[in-house]
Image (cartoon, rainbow, N blue to C red; front, side, top):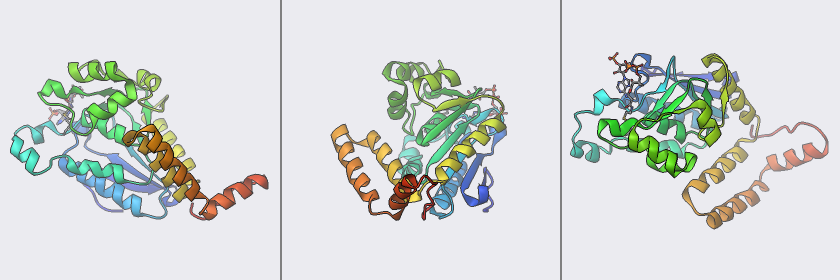
Length: 263
Ligand code: HXC
């Protein structure tokens, strides 16, 4: 694979899974601009790799990511942030078609919480801790936190987290509220193994069908119910143009496992 300095990126499971490990543990994986560029590069590389079925993003030690790099951004002026479109490139994460699974092992604060919410499935380790502490720094969330957190945990809880900058959410509450899919008990290794196992299950499916399903689910974020249902129906009809739909349904009738062509 490529040589990165702030992350590790490796292919697992015969190339079916791309694993991205944020690797600045001394700074609790603070999301410097260099680190985020590498994350995006790795995501785009795996998205374009026809073997990869799912991507896993995880942290190290006690942090998934403790937010944007405060030391790096503290002296920015409005004109610097605005003119350079600081953090604008994070938006390209939404354009990744392959499913992204976040394995959140520890702190997911500020931009770290926003990065987790940009992923498609979030699994939490027992020590996961979510929060939006930007107001403590005299700023506000800038990568979707004010928009996504409210959809995940409701207005009152999102407001409390964002406006106080405290009242972090632990793994158990995050699972109960739906911010994460579930809590994986045990070590960080157990969490990562589970995330890879979910990725493998997705990688068994037909890739175009997975991408269509992800596109449909994500549309619920962007458009209203009636428009979303229309979009789902047209993409549902489109699956009947795929050999994998024929194979999937035929395999069911023959009581065997499907052998998808575009796996
Ligand atoms: C830069 C960071 C950092 C960050 C931690 N570090 N978070 N450096 N940016 N976001 C560094 C510390 O400075 C320290 O470096 C080392 O990591 C270890 O952190 P400690 O604070 O000593 O650890 P601990 O006492 O265990 O406290 C953990 C913590 C705390 C509660 C997570 O680090 C913390 O509050 N971090 C900041 C969280 C935050 O405010 N995030 C939001 C950022 S704003 P040294 O050199 O002293 O060892 C944001 C906006 C996004 O994300 C939107 C637009 C960009």
